[in-house]
Length: 285
Image (cartoon, rainbow, N blue to C red; front, side):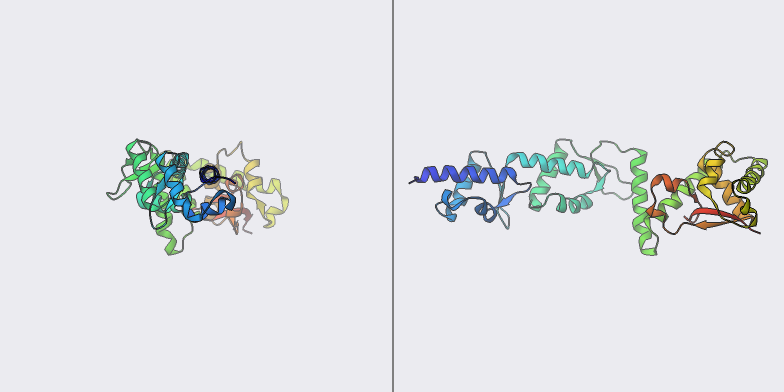
């Protein structure tokens, strides 16, 4: 018959194994299920056994509404998840805490806050200037780039415009269109080039499809590829098409659901200032 010391040793092995295999802290109830009855004289003995493991430094412990236990290495994993949450960009402290509720399941809030505070103290996470307001942002980088702040601005725009009925796709499309306009403001094409580009487009439509002269639709992606040498660059082509449409010489057919397309497929469409993506063009006859 096994003596009490042997039982405690076996129970410790099973408890440590369960903690090692777990991706989150475990309660006494969860640990009891991982230890065979043959290795534990009584379930009431487990808390005392765990406290001995805590005293020897083999196990960490946090007493909250529900006491939980974990191996020291699990804190490193928790730290890595916090850093991963900031890898895509800075977050407010409130946003990060909300995100960690799902990333660090099983960890008490006070312990999550403690790990976060330690990462800040160790300068693995930094407090950086916000885009607006006074509350500092939390970031994995000591200094933010313009790209970081632009991303924050876009995220803010999406959030604020959503109640007005605008989708994220519409916000991004409008932003892209504005950027294209700003990039061409300093060096606008000369007027003769506008006319030449428009005329070239009209002529190529008929060359690609004779029936286009009678109003048959022509694929804009096919037309774009055909004119890659004469009208290079997405912006120049899109603007030439949109000028023709504004003049009433052509009509454009919008894609019903551009979000279903790949990035490459969306690039082949023509984007207007209202966020509409056009897939085909037709002569007005």
